[in-house]
Image 1 (cartoon, rainbow, N blue to C red):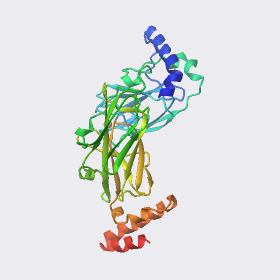
Image 2 (cartoon, rainbow, N blue to C red):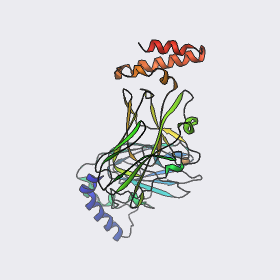
Image 3 (cartoon, rainbow, N blue to C red):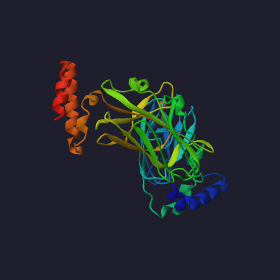
Image 4 (tube, rainbow, N blue to C red):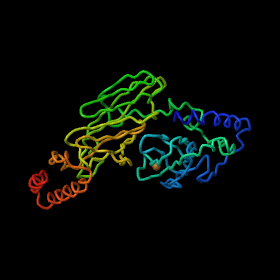
Length: 348
Ligand SMILES: [Cu+2]
């Protein structure tokens, strides 16, 4: 974000000003999601995003418009952006400054899935095409404007204390630009210097694993729950300048542990985070760049009975461990008493 604005911010701002002076007559509402477009339009209707996958260049803006008849959201799986509720006819825009593949969903209807692919911009494009940069979004949100501050995203994050994470497990106050660590129990979050350009209070919220149990597969269990509440001078911050680093340690962590995103809705829904967690020994790590969703971590229920073998096995044995767990699970279903035997074998 920083680098993007240092490099391209000025020309884009100048072009935006030129566009404003021209009366914004260059709007291209039907902008096709072609690789060279500076904006791409995604229509939300009939419980799907159309197109479901849109490819844009670094620095381009994607605009989602709800053509009804229901309310929806366009919510990044990893907390990068969240449109909030889009009423019928409403639009939301987000400008992508970092190349990558971004999965998103509707937090009201989790089966609605979409992807934004952001390709790296060539160095000469920012000033090459005034028409491309002069396309204002229909209803620009604060985050959509290229002139918005990159380090103080105005997008307000939900307060996840109200959506399953009522307890402040840990809290740290950071001066502008300062890094730090916040922890509770076997969970910790490391914040690199430069993650926030303003002074913030970074709170690590936690909830009861049992309150999320109904959202996971019957053979999985929730072993950790957490959300971030980051409050700066202008309110709760939804998007960070850099990812923060989350770590969960403990014998319940297994190579099959998975991270789920939870919604700020009632009832809460959950979708699997598209980025796999990294598990080494009894430590699970994952990076998060925003506070637009909450999270929980699962592990197969049997993992609790076969904790010790997790250490000392390289990544190549992960598949084998998975099969042992599957076999053990089948044994439980069939025989009911197979667990201990298998666990003992497994431990060799
Ligand atoms: Cu929806």
